[in-house]
Length: 417
Picture 1 (tube, rainbow, N blue to C red):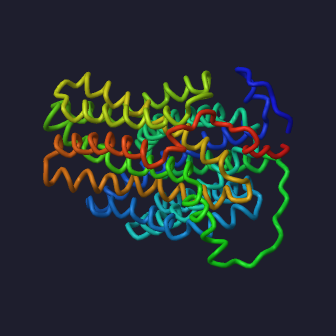
Picture 2 (cartoon, rainbow, N blue to C red; picture 1 turned 90 degrees about the vertical axis):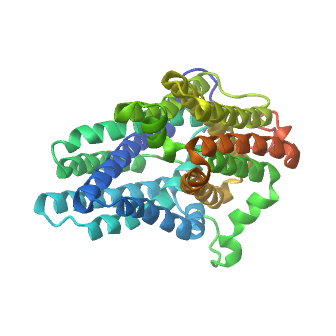
Protein backbone atom coordinates (compact mmCIF):
# COMPACT_ATOMS: atom_id res chain seq x y z
CA UNK A 1 0.00 0.00 0.00
CA UNK A 2 1.44 3.32 -0.94
CA UNK A 3 1.28 6.19 1.44
CA UNK A 4 -1.68 8.39 0.74
CA UNK A 5 -1.57 12.15 1.22
CA UNK A 6 -2.67 13.26 4.63
CA UNK A 7 -5.78 14.97 3.34
CA UNK A 8 -9.17 15.13 4.94
CA UNK A 9 -10.49 12.21 2.90
CA UNK A 10 -7.27 10.14 2.90
CA UNK A 11 -8.70 7.44 5.17
CA UNK A 12 -11.55 6.75 2.77
CA UNK A 13 -9.02 5.73 0.12
CA UNK A 14 -7.98 2.70 2.21
CA UNK A 15 -10.62 0.06 1.54
CA UNK A 16 -9.41 -2.40 4.17
CA UNK A 17 -9.54 0.20 6.93
CA UNK A 18 -13.05 1.31 5.97
CA UNK A 19 -14.25 -2.30 5.92
CA UNK A 20 -12.83 -2.74 9.42
CA UNK A 21 -14.41 0.54 10.54
CA UNK A 22 -17.89 -0.49 9.43
CA UNK A 23 -17.37 -3.99 10.86
CA UNK A 24 -16.41 -2.58 14.25
CA UNK A 25 -19.35 -0.18 14.16
CA UNK A 26 -21.80 -3.04 13.59
CA UNK A 27 -20.00 -5.35 16.01
CA UNK A 28 -19.82 -2.83 18.86
CA UNK A 29 -23.47 -1.82 18.44
CA UNK A 30 -24.46 -5.51 18.52
CA UNK A 31 -22.26 -6.17 21.55
CA UNK A 32 -23.74 -3.24 23.46
CA UNK A 33 -27.28 -4.36 22.61
CA UNK A 34 -26.45 -7.93 23.59
CA UNK A 35 -25.10 -6.94 27.00
CA UNK A 36 -28.13 -4.75 27.72
CA UNK A 37 -30.42 -7.68 26.88
CA UNK A 38 -28.38 -10.19 28.91
CA UNK A 39 -28.34 -7.89 31.96
CA UNK A 40 -32.06 -7.16 31.80
CA UNK A 41 -32.94 -10.80 31.21
CA UNK A 42 -30.70 -11.93 34.08
CA UNK A 43 -32.33 -9.49 36.46
CA UNK A 44 -35.79 -10.56 35.26
CA UNK A 45 -34.89 -14.19 35.95
CA UNK A 46 -33.12 -13.85 39.31
CA UNK A 47 -33.64 -10.35 40.70
CA UNK A 48 -30.07 -10.60 42.00
CA UNK A 49 -27.47 -7.81 41.83
CA UNK A 50 -24.85 -10.49 42.59
CA UNK A 51 -25.75 -12.32 39.39
CA UNK A 52 -25.41 -9.07 37.43
CA UNK A 53 -21.92 -8.70 38.86
CA UNK A 54 -21.10 -12.30 37.89
CA UNK A 55 -21.93 -11.53 34.26
CA UNK A 56 -19.18 -8.90 34.18
CA UNK A 57 -16.70 -10.98 36.17
CA UNK A 58 -17.17 -14.05 33.98
CA UNK A 59 -16.39 -11.95 30.92
CA UNK A 60 -13.24 -10.42 32.40
CA UNK A 61 -11.72 -13.61 33.85
CA UNK A 62 -11.30 -15.45 30.49
CA UNK A 63 -9.75 -12.33 28.93
CA UNK A 64 -7.13 -12.36 31.67
CA UNK A 65 -6.51 -16.11 31.42
CA UNK A 66 -6.28 -16.18 27.61
CA UNK A 67 -4.27 -13.00 27.02
CA UNK A 68 -0.90 -14.69 26.44
CA UNK A 69 -2.03 -17.46 24.06
CA UNK A 70 -4.32 -15.00 22.25
CA UNK A 71 -1.44 -12.63 21.55
CA UNK A 72 0.76 -15.46 20.27
CA UNK A 73 -2.00 -16.69 17.93
CA UNK A 74 -2.70 -13.19 16.59
CA UNK A 75 0.97 -12.69 15.69
CA UNK A 76 1.03 -15.91 13.65
CA UNK A 77 -2.27 -15.87 11.76
CA UNK A 78 -4.34 -13.61 9.51
CA UNK A 79 -5.77 -11.02 11.89
CA UNK A 80 -8.87 -10.12 9.88
CA UNK A 81 -9.90 -13.79 9.78
CA UNK A 82 -9.40 -14.07 13.55
CA UNK A 83 -11.73 -11.09 14.05
CA UNK A 84 -14.25 -12.62 11.62
CA UNK A 85 -14.17 -15.95 13.50
CA UNK A 86 -14.75 -14.13 16.80
CA UNK A 87 -17.72 -12.30 15.32
CA UNK A 88 -19.11 -15.54 13.88
CA UNK A 89 -18.92 -17.10 17.35
CA UNK A 90 -20.97 -14.19 18.68
CA UNK A 91 -23.52 -14.85 15.94
CA UNK A 92 -23.89 -18.37 17.37
CA UNK A 93 -24.20 -17.00 20.92
CA UNK A 94 -26.90 -14.52 19.89
CA UNK A 95 -28.83 -17.23 18.03
CA UNK A 96 -28.61 -19.54 21.06
CA UNK A 97 -30.00 -16.79 23.29
CA UNK A 98 -32.66 -16.05 20.69
CA UNK A 99 -33.78 -19.68 20.70
CA UNK A 100 -33.58 -19.89 24.49
CA UNK A 101 -35.77 -16.81 24.91
CA UNK A 102 -38.36 -17.85 22.35
CA UNK A 103 -38.56 -21.49 23.46
CA UNK A 104 -38.39 -20.90 27.18
CA UNK A 105 -35.08 -22.55 28.11
CA UNK A 106 -33.17 -19.31 28.85
CA UNK A 107 -31.85 -19.57 32.41
CA UNK A 108 -29.33 -18.12 34.82
CA UNK A 109 -26.86 -20.86 34.00
CA UNK A 110 -27.24 -20.28 30.26
CA UNK A 111 -26.61 -16.55 30.62
CA UNK A 112 -23.56 -17.13 32.82
CA UNK A 113 -22.26 -19.74 30.39
CA UNK A 114 -22.50 -17.45 27.36
CA UNK A 115 -20.79 -14.72 29.41
CA UNK A 116 -17.74 -16.99 29.68
CA UNK A 117 -17.86 -17.60 25.91
CA UNK A 118 -18.14 -13.87 25.19
CA UNK A 119 -15.22 -13.07 27.47
CA UNK A 120 -13.11 -15.77 25.80
CA UNK A 121 -13.95 -14.49 22.33
CA UNK A 122 -13.11 -10.90 23.20
CA UNK A 123 -9.71 -11.99 24.53
CA UNK A 124 -8.87 -12.64 20.88
CA UNK A 125 -11.05 -10.06 19.12
CA UNK A 126 -9.91 -6.87 20.88
CA UNK A 127 -6.14 -7.29 20.44
CA UNK A 128 -6.59 -8.64 16.90
CA UNK A 129 -8.51 -5.50 15.94
CA UNK A 130 -5.89 -3.26 17.54
CA UNK A 131 -3.03 -5.07 15.79
CA UNK A 132 -4.87 -5.10 12.45
CA UNK A 133 -5.36 -1.35 12.03
CA UNK A 134 -1.64 -0.47 11.47
CA UNK A 135 -1.59 -2.96 8.58
CA UNK A 136 -4.38 -1.16 6.75
CA UNK A 137 -3.21 2.49 6.77
CA UNK A 138 0.18 4.21 6.40
CA UNK A 139 1.96 5.11 9.62
CA UNK A 140 1.41 8.82 8.94
CA UNK A 141 -2.37 8.27 9.01
CA UNK A 142 -2.52 6.00 12.05
CA UNK A 143 -3.37 8.72 14.60
CA UNK A 144 -6.18 9.98 12.35
CA UNK A 145 -7.38 6.42 11.78
CA UNK A 146 -7.53 5.66 15.50
CA UNK A 147 -9.40 8.91 16.21
CA UNK A 148 -11.87 8.20 13.38
CA UNK A 149 -12.35 4.65 14.71
CA UNK A 150 -12.97 5.99 18.20
CA UNK A 151 -15.60 8.41 16.88
CA UNK A 152 -17.53 5.52 15.35
CA UNK A 153 -17.14 3.35 18.42
CA UNK A 154 -18.33 6.09 20.76
CA UNK A 155 -21.38 6.59 18.58
CA UNK A 156 -22.10 2.87 18.73
CA UNK A 157 -21.55 2.84 22.51
CA UNK A 158 -24.06 5.67 22.92
CA UNK A 159 -26.66 4.35 20.46
CA UNK A 160 -26.29 0.60 21.07
CA UNK A 161 -27.74 0.43 24.61
CA UNK A 162 -30.55 2.87 23.76
CA UNK A 163 -31.49 0.88 20.66
CA UNK A 164 -31.23 -2.38 22.58
CA UNK A 165 -33.56 -1.04 25.25
CA UNK A 166 -36.14 -0.01 22.66
CA UNK A 167 -36.00 -3.35 20.83
CA UNK A 168 -36.15 -5.27 24.13
CA UNK A 169 -39.69 -3.95 24.55
CA UNK A 170 -40.60 -6.40 21.76
CA UNK A 171 -38.95 -9.23 23.68
CA UNK A 172 -35.47 -10.49 24.50
CA UNK A 173 -35.57 -12.87 21.53
CA UNK A 174 -36.11 -9.99 19.10
CA UNK A 175 -33.09 -8.15 20.52
CA UNK A 176 -30.89 -11.23 20.17
CA UNK A 177 -32.08 -11.73 16.57
CA UNK A 178 -31.06 -8.17 15.66
CA UNK A 179 -27.69 -8.74 17.38
CA UNK A 180 -27.15 -11.92 15.34
CA UNK A 181 -27.84 -10.01 12.12
CA UNK A 182 -25.40 -7.22 13.01
CA UNK A 183 -22.67 -9.69 14.03
CA UNK A 184 -23.19 -11.47 10.68
CA UNK A 185 -22.71 -8.24 8.76
CA UNK A 186 -19.57 -7.45 10.77
CA UNK A 187 -18.09 -10.90 10.15
CA UNK A 188 -18.75 -10.66 6.40
CA UNK A 189 -17.05 -7.27 6.23
CA UNK A 190 -13.97 -8.61 8.02
CA UNK A 191 -13.74 -11.55 5.62
CA UNK A 192 -13.55 -9.03 2.76
CA UNK A 193 -10.44 -7.33 4.20
CA UNK A 194 -7.26 -8.02 2.23
CA UNK A 195 -3.65 -7.37 3.22
CA UNK A 196 -0.33 -9.10 2.71
CA UNK A 197 0.10 -11.75 5.37
CA UNK A 198 3.35 -13.69 5.46
CA UNK A 199 3.14 -16.37 8.18
CA UNK A 200 6.24 -16.27 10.40
CA UNK A 201 8.52 -19.33 10.50
CA UNK A 202 7.12 -22.14 12.62
CA UNK A 203 8.59 -22.03 16.11
CA UNK A 204 7.69 -24.02 19.23
CA UNK A 205 5.39 -22.36 21.72
CA UNK A 206 7.39 -21.65 24.88
CA UNK A 207 6.98 -19.41 27.89
CA UNK A 208 9.48 -17.12 26.22
CA UNK A 209 7.31 -16.65 23.13
CA UNK A 210 4.12 -16.29 25.19
CA UNK A 211 5.69 -13.70 27.52
CA UNK A 212 7.47 -11.80 24.74
CA UNK A 213 4.80 -9.09 24.76
CA UNK A 214 5.18 -8.54 28.50
CA UNK A 215 8.98 -8.40 28.19
CA UNK A 216 8.74 -5.95 25.28
CA UNK A 217 6.48 -3.58 27.22
CA UNK A 218 8.76 -3.52 30.25
CA UNK A 219 11.87 -2.99 28.11
CA UNK A 220 10.39 -0.17 26.00
CA UNK A 221 9.90 2.66 28.49
CA UNK A 222 7.71 4.79 26.21
CA UNK A 223 5.26 1.90 25.81
CA UNK A 224 5.35 0.98 29.51
CA UNK A 225 4.82 4.59 30.53
CA UNK A 226 1.87 5.10 28.17
CA UNK A 227 0.07 1.87 29.12
CA UNK A 228 0.66 2.17 32.88
CA UNK A 229 -0.35 5.85 32.87
CA UNK A 230 -3.76 4.91 31.46
CA UNK A 231 -4.07 2.00 33.89
CA UNK A 232 -3.53 4.07 37.02
CA UNK A 233 -5.45 7.12 35.78
CA UNK A 234 -8.62 5.10 35.09
CA UNK A 235 -8.08 2.93 38.17
CA UNK A 236 -7.98 5.97 40.46
CA UNK A 237 -10.09 8.52 38.62
CA UNK A 238 -13.10 6.55 37.37
CA UNK A 239 -16.46 7.24 38.99
CA UNK A 240 -18.91 5.26 36.85
CA UNK A 241 -19.87 2.88 39.65
CA UNK A 242 -20.84 5.81 41.91
CA UNK A 243 -23.03 7.70 39.42
CA UNK A 244 -26.31 6.27 40.83
CA UNK A 245 -25.39 7.66 44.28
CA UNK A 246 -24.58 11.10 42.87
CA UNK A 247 -27.80 11.14 40.81
CA UNK A 248 -30.03 10.15 43.72
CA UNK A 249 -28.47 11.57 46.88
CA UNK A 250 -26.28 14.52 45.80
CA UNK A 251 -27.70 15.99 42.59
CA UNK A 252 -31.30 14.77 43.16
CA UNK A 253 -32.00 14.19 39.46
CA UNK A 254 -33.44 10.66 39.52
CA UNK A 255 -33.03 7.93 36.89
CA UNK A 256 -33.39 10.34 33.94
CA UNK A 257 -30.51 12.40 35.27
CA UNK A 258 -28.51 9.24 35.83
CA UNK A 259 -28.88 8.38 32.16
CA UNK A 260 -27.58 11.82 31.19
CA UNK A 261 -24.67 11.50 33.62
CA UNK A 262 -23.70 8.13 32.15
CA UNK A 263 -23.91 9.49 28.60
CA UNK A 264 -21.89 12.68 29.23
CA UNK A 265 -18.37 11.13 29.12
CA UNK A 266 -19.23 9.33 25.87
CA UNK A 267 -20.57 12.56 24.33
CA UNK A 268 -17.37 14.39 25.26
CA UNK A 269 -15.29 11.52 23.90
CA UNK A 270 -17.29 11.45 20.66
CA UNK A 271 -16.83 15.18 20.05
CA UNK A 272 -13.11 14.99 20.80
CA UNK A 273 -12.60 11.96 18.56
CA UNK A 274 -14.27 13.81 15.68
CA UNK A 275 -11.94 16.77 16.29
CA UNK A 276 -8.87 14.53 16.44
CA UNK A 277 -9.83 12.79 13.21
CA UNK A 278 -9.95 16.23 11.54
CA UNK A 279 -6.91 17.71 13.33
CA UNK A 280 -4.70 14.77 14.36
CA UNK A 281 -1.93 15.06 16.93
CA UNK A 282 1.34 15.79 15.18
CA UNK A 283 3.77 17.25 17.73
CA UNK A 284 4.38 17.23 21.50
CA UNK A 285 2.54 13.94 21.87
CA UNK A 286 4.15 13.07 25.23
CA UNK A 287 3.28 16.35 26.99
CA UNK A 288 -0.19 16.19 25.45
CA UNK A 289 -0.73 12.67 26.84
CA UNK A 290 0.33 13.70 30.35
CA UNK A 291 -1.67 16.92 30.10
CA UNK A 292 -4.80 15.03 29.05
CA UNK A 293 -4.51 12.76 32.11
CA UNK A 294 -4.10 15.83 34.34
CA UNK A 295 -7.21 17.43 32.80
CA UNK A 296 -9.07 14.16 33.41
CA UNK A 297 -8.08 14.32 37.10
CA UNK A 298 -9.16 17.97 37.39
CA UNK A 299 -12.50 17.20 35.74
CA UNK A 300 -13.14 14.42 38.25
CA UNK A 301 -12.28 16.81 41.10
CA UNK A 302 -14.87 19.28 39.79
CA UNK A 303 -17.44 16.50 39.41
CA UNK A 304 -16.81 15.22 42.93
CA UNK A 305 -17.29 18.68 44.48
CA UNK A 306 -20.17 19.83 42.26
CA UNK A 307 -23.73 20.13 43.56
CA UNK A 308 -25.06 21.61 40.29
CA UNK A 309 -26.34 19.17 37.71
CA UNK A 310 -25.19 21.22 34.71
CA UNK A 311 -21.68 21.54 36.14
CA UNK A 312 -21.52 17.81 36.81
CA UNK A 313 -22.56 17.07 33.23
CA UNK A 314 -19.92 19.45 31.90
CA UNK A 315 -17.21 17.97 34.12
CA UNK A 316 -18.00 14.44 32.96
CA UNK A 317 -18.03 15.55 29.31
CA UNK A 318 -14.60 17.15 29.78
CA UNK A 319 -13.34 13.97 31.43
CA UNK A 320 -14.52 11.94 28.43
CA UNK A 321 -12.87 14.34 25.99
CA UNK A 322 -9.57 14.27 27.93
CA UNK A 323 -9.70 10.49 28.13
CA UNK A 324 -10.18 10.29 24.36
CA UNK A 325 -7.02 12.37 23.78
CA UNK A 326 -5.18 9.98 26.10
CA UNK A 327 -6.57 6.91 24.32
CA UNK A 328 -5.67 8.08 20.81
CA UNK A 329 -2.15 9.22 21.70
CA UNK A 330 -1.47 6.10 23.76
CA UNK A 331 -2.76 3.64 21.18
CA UNK A 332 -0.85 5.38 18.39
CA UNK A 333 2.39 5.39 20.39
CA UNK A 334 2.02 1.73 21.36
CA UNK A 335 1.21 0.56 17.82
CA UNK A 336 4.01 2.54 16.16
CA UNK A 337 6.63 1.60 18.74
CA UNK A 338 5.80 -2.10 18.40
CA UNK A 339 7.15 -4.21 15.52
CA UNK A 340 4.39 -5.89 13.54
CA UNK A 341 5.60 -9.35 14.60
CA UNK A 342 4.89 -8.36 18.22
CA UNK A 343 1.70 -6.33 17.86
CA UNK A 344 -0.67 -9.19 18.71
CA UNK A 345 1.08 -10.05 21.97
CA UNK A 346 1.54 -6.42 23.00
CA UNK A 347 -2.10 -5.60 22.14
CA UNK A 348 -3.27 -8.60 24.18
CA UNK A 349 -1.37 -7.36 27.25
CA UNK A 350 -2.70 -3.85 26.63
CA UNK A 351 -6.26 -5.21 26.51
CA UNK A 352 -5.75 -6.83 29.91
CA UNK A 353 -4.52 -3.50 31.30
CA UNK A 354 -7.62 -1.75 29.94
CA UNK A 355 -9.97 -4.39 31.36
CA UNK A 356 -8.20 -4.37 34.72
CA UNK A 357 -8.35 -0.59 35.00
CA UNK A 358 -12.10 -0.54 34.30
CA UNK A 359 -13.06 -3.49 36.51
CA UNK A 360 -10.68 -2.73 39.39
CA UNK A 361 -11.47 0.96 39.08
CA UNK A 362 -15.13 0.27 39.86
CA UNK A 363 -14.09 -1.84 42.85
CA UNK A 364 -11.71 0.91 44.05
CA UNK A 365 -14.46 3.53 43.77
CA UNK A 366 -16.90 1.40 45.77
CA UNK A 367 -14.34 0.52 48.45
CA UNK A 368 -13.19 4.10 49.03
CA UNK A 369 -16.80 5.34 48.94
CA UNK A 370 -17.62 2.91 51.75
CA UNK A 371 -14.86 4.51 53.82
CA UNK A 372 -14.94 8.17 52.75
CA UNK A 373 -18.35 8.61 51.13
CA UNK A 374 -18.94 9.15 47.40
CA UNK A 375 -17.63 12.72 47.33
CA UNK A 376 -14.49 11.76 49.22
CA UNK A 377 -13.93 8.81 46.91
CA UNK A 378 -14.15 10.87 43.70
CA UNK A 379 -12.09 13.75 45.09
CA UNK A 380 -9.39 11.37 46.30
CA UNK A 381 -9.41 9.65 42.89
CA UNK A 382 -9.03 12.97 41.08
CA UNK A 383 -6.12 13.97 43.31
CA UNK A 384 -4.57 10.55 42.78
CA UNK A 385 -4.81 10.96 39.00
CA UNK A 386 -3.08 14.34 39.20
CA UNK A 387 -0.37 12.79 41.34
CA UNK A 388 0.12 9.98 38.82
CA UNK A 389 0.49 12.50 35.97
CA UNK A 390 3.16 14.34 37.97
CA UNK A 391 5.01 11.15 38.93
CA UNK A 392 5.00 9.82 35.36
CA UNK A 393 6.53 13.13 34.23
CA UNK A 394 9.59 12.21 36.33
CA UNK A 395 9.55 8.41 36.06
CA UNK A 396 9.24 8.28 32.27
CA UNK A 397 11.22 11.22 30.83
CA UNK A 398 11.30 9.65 27.35
CA UNK A 399 7.50 9.67 27.32
CA UNK A 400 7.29 13.20 28.75
CA UNK A 401 9.72 14.47 26.07
CA UNK A 402 8.19 12.59 23.14
CA UNK A 403 7.44 14.96 20.28
CA UNK A 404 6.22 13.40 17.01
CA UNK A 405 3.96 10.37 17.11
CA UNK A 406 5.74 8.96 14.06
CA UNK A 407 9.50 9.03 14.72
CA UNK A 408 11.68 8.77 11.61
CA UNK A 409 12.72 5.24 10.78
CA UNK A 410 10.80 3.47 13.53
CA UNK A 411 7.31 3.06 12.14
CA UNK A 412 6.52 -0.05 10.17
CA UNK A 413 4.82 0.08 6.82
CA UNK A 414 1.31 -1.25 6.43
CA UNK A 415 0.38 -4.33 4.52
CA UNK A 416 -1.10 -4.27 1.03
CA UNK A 417 -4.90 -4.52 0.90
